[in-house]
Structures are given as structure tokens and as C-alpha cells.
Length: 483
Image (cartoon, rainbow, N blue to C red; front, top):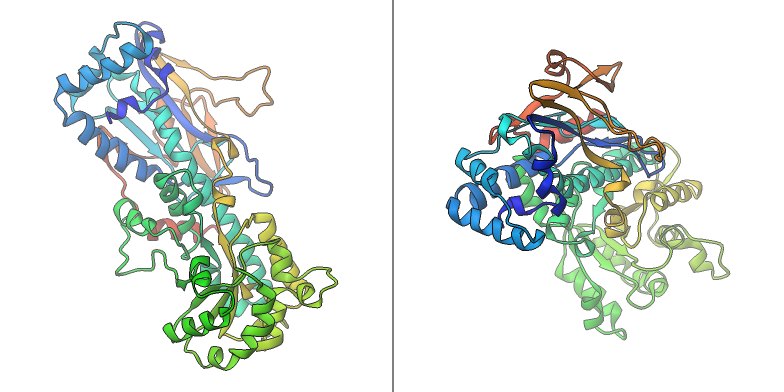
């Protein structure tokens, strides 16, 4: 599809709606509000994907490389019938003649933790006749960028929580945290691109992921190499169809066959197809010697019920249910008590829970395990679409707003500040300058053009060319430096 069709319909008339003599439109992309408790900075991520995939690849393949007449007729066909008018496409033809997008994007480095109400990047047209293009790109840009930023931020919050509890209860194994949050979200996301964008954001903070296309996407857009570095990884794992195919009557036989099929490495087995507590108290004791003699770990995966109660136990008259998965595994397989006084399961056995995990539940699981004397590292959490799909652009109030225009050679500082709003939608005013104040990124608006050229924003894209091409490794290092 012609990427100029990837827009809101109301953008089509804006070229004529700007004042006569408009030659420049300058806008910024900003997270304006956090709707997640405890998060006051947002990780910036996804712009490089957007530039490579859309501003370069799709514009070149589906617009600039297509004959102008074909592009023009197609665009006019849809817009004419959409608006019911004889639409003038001369500006579209002029852009095609130019052969590239006359846009400059200046941005903070991806992986930066950006405070609420501080812009992540700015856009401006580089040729006066294409002033209309800056905000025409808003719809496409917003559609793509909000999700990787949002998922990266939420994943990073999980990592902070898991890291804090690991340091409290099992600091010797704190490096395990990179595997403790595992992306299970792909099947529940709104589409393939959504899965990839969110999954790449997850991979900034965790190595564990079942969203396989993320591995290729991070190579294509963020210069990783799966043959030379750990991009994402996972383990052999079953699903309910496997367990059902082995029959309820011989579930223990299915476990035994799986242990024989995978004599080494980590093996994750979904264990609540019928009776989780029977698996834990009857089958595993029978298979104990086979489990302990394996060169690897058997991971038990509950997949239903309240995650906190299933893993940690609860106030229940049934003693087995009251103990929960981790304590039951400890009762059968034991383990060690670390220097901090917390119980760590035998390395041959473990648990993962991947249904309806949230930041709050992750915190509760770690807290409850700690209260019972268990290290938080005894469990892996599968973070799925219950976490990553239940978000919108408004989760962090993302918006792209114009704050400066030039009309007939005169610069105008513009802004919005609705009297009916609580302040969330109030924009910056004029040109902006970002600077570091004792480790905190701050914004100064209404600056001169000379001051705007300085500061933390750097040009990453200009006139059809990518000028900064970061790697996954570098972005992960930036995030780790935040700790």
C-alpha cells in the first residue's frame, strides 16, 4: 500500500488549512501522563524500526519506486471517493518528483528513560513546500511507536521488581533475572507487527521469549546477530494437546516419556491439564529419581487459577493447596538455604507460571515467597498479552504536537492548553531544547533556533537517510546503565 494512505482521513485537508505562506511545521513526540502506578519515566524505543521499515523501505518500494502516474491515480481514486470531491494531488506528485522524504528527525538515544512530559524526538520539514508532511506522518508514527515504548517500559518495570527481590533473597543468582520474565504474549496480541514491536520491547530487559519472530526483527532493525550473541531464547516445552494426547489415565507415562525424550537441558511441562496437585504430590515423587538423574531441570508449569495463590499457597483447608507449588516442590526435592537465609530449590526442579501475570501479581508472588522463606528466583513468570495487550496509546499519554511554525518568513511559537483539561494535554511552546540536569532529562521550550540545535537531541534521519543505526547491544547497555 502507498504509505501516504496510512493516515487518518482528516489529515487530507490540512495542507489547505494552514495559513497561507506556511513553510515550516515543527512537532514533537511526548509521553504526557503515566497511568501505571510507580512508573514516571518511559523507555524510548521503536523509532529506528519505524524509520527503516516505513520512512525508508515502504516509501521507497511502495511510493518513490512506483511510476508517478500510478501512484497519483491510486491516491486520487481513494481520496476522491472518500471525500466526495475532485482532490488536487499536485503536492503528492511533487513529493514523488523529489524522490525522498524531506523530513528531519532529532531524537534521544533509544533505551533512554524519558520523564513524563519530556519529548523523545522532534520532526520538521526540510523543504518549505512540504510543510504539510510533518504532521501528515503523525498517524502512522503514532500507530507504530507507542507500543514498543509502552512494552519496553512495562518489561523494564518487571525487571526492576524481579531484580530487587532477587538481590534481597538470592543475590548469588541475581543474573538469572534476565530469564525470569518470559514473553508469552504473541498469540494474544492484535497482529504480527504488534507482537514483534511489543516483543522487541520486552527483549530489551529480558532474554526469555517465545515470540520467535523477534529474533529476526532485532537482526533486521537493530543490528543483532543470533549466531554471535544472546538475542532471545527459550526451552523445550509442552502444551495441553501433548498432555491430552497421552491420555488422562497415563499422565505419568507422558511425563516419563518426555523425560526420556529430553535427557538433557531444561524441559517445561504444563501440569494442570487435569489435576496439578496430583502431579505434584503423586507423579513427581514416583519420578523423583528420573528427575534428579537428568542432566537438566524439569520445570512445572501451572496454567490456571490465581497465580499468587497457586505458586505461593493460600489460606485453604486443603493442606496441599495451602502450601502452593514452590513449597510442595521443596517438600519433595529440597534444595539449599543460601547465605541470605532463603530456600533455593534443587537445580533439577523449578516452576513457571504464565497465565494472567501483571506487575502487581509479580510483586505479590515475590513478596509472598519471601515471607515464606523462599528465594524469588524459584519461579519464572510468563508475561503474556494480559500484560502487553491491555494497553493503549493513552497508557503513557503519547501524542505528537506541533509547537512552532513559520508563516511568510515569521516564526510563530504555538501551543495547546485546553481550559477543560487537567493539564495532561498542555503542550510545549515553540522550539525545544533538552538538557541533562544532575542526571535528569529536562525540557526548555521557547528557545532560539541556535539553542534548539544544541542539547541532547541528535539527528537520526534526514532527507530519506538513516544517520544513526544503533544495535540491540548498545540499547540494552543504556538500559542497564539506568539501574
